[in-house]
Image (cartoon, rainbow, N blue to C red; front, side):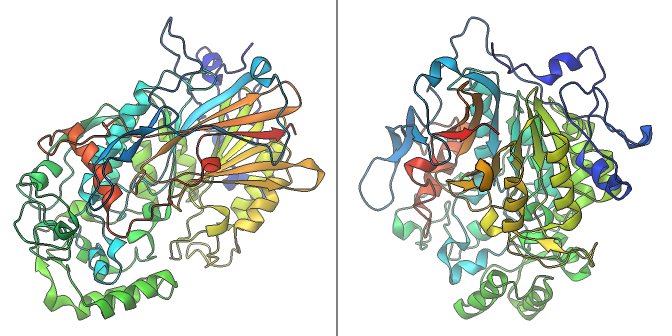
Length: 588
């Protein structure tokens, strides 16, 4: 019998409460222990005031009478977008699917396990949606004069592209290997791109449902690099022979009007949870500049820089890559030095940078609740404590832990503070009878930025190796699921005593091949556990029609343009062993 029954089922008749990370963080100094065991109905708190409503994953039941397992339709096991022609600008069509690879580095797969296994949990991971206000005055498009991939021709279509991904999830019949109900969607950060209020509103509506006009500034027409007349950028509605048209990019007269037209998201028909990324926490994903009045005013102002020299672009990009300007002071001076080159645009207060508190309040806003849970993992306790990490129960046998690996001190790489690392260790210890899946934005190898958090200047920061050490010390950890690198990579981690877990990093939905991932956890009833990973594309057709600028047509075009983006990395799909897999583990 499957153990997939959601805790939500029993919660319908009982006001089930478990603890959130923020509440744990608040009470750590008092030594209060918290548990998320299936038999608990209330958190083990020192006082009622410390309790918070639990985020609980309500599973979506498969359609009545439908044969749900196994199936491949709508997944990359069945088909993947692939180029139809051999050179130049390449149109896409239906390509062969990716086979499933069994990986036994951490445990030997036993014969007959398919007939024995029972489902523990199933969920979907989104990551790196990078919803973009492409007309934002602070954007760094002009770095393209040095690095061609610093601006992508498809960036104006992130919203219809993300909605199409929601539509794909809504059409899934359940988990493709086991047929188990999908419990939730977790988005592992970089949900927005420029840390702008406009983008945050779009993200919340994409996930929970609503009408979105992906436009800012002048409500009547687009104002940005794609109608600037500059050959550096694709000018879709102009006869200008720009650099991208020279590579085969099409002339599409009404592209920009369509890109800023109102679209509608149905919202996920699953609950969804949120993990924060560096582009959500920091202006432009790299600057700890929320207190800089000049940059805050420039974000909502009426001047936009669109072109600089190769040398100036290289200098600024090097400063970002090498973390030479984490506070954005040099960036502010750079903008001031190029003020006379800026072009007029329509000011818009919606482009203002949002703070950590703004991010939490948006998630807690009833207008964006969708199918819940309230706060999408976050709670008022997070808001009070100034934290963005939490734990939640996925199913009877599995808990989820969402970390905040961003560093408010600046730079795009990550780390976590001592309080969060201790909380992680304690949460795993208190829930040793449950399997655990850990979520974060950064990967273990990209947690190298240990710059102090301005809000906690005396607190030590810890990198990926220390997080691995904590996770490997607990026998109940099955997986660490993350993003950030925009590439599919699955890494085995093994420690002494037979403890091990898989690190599952998933490609973005902004760079080709624009993927999300279904993850299924099963008990093989032979001393091993398997994690099945299955990649999915958006629901948009692989073939594009340049005459179709509907919401669906734009989502298809989004994929094709991303494939052809000059300078795009063609290895982001990863190897076969990083895509559709069965990852075997010894039981803890």
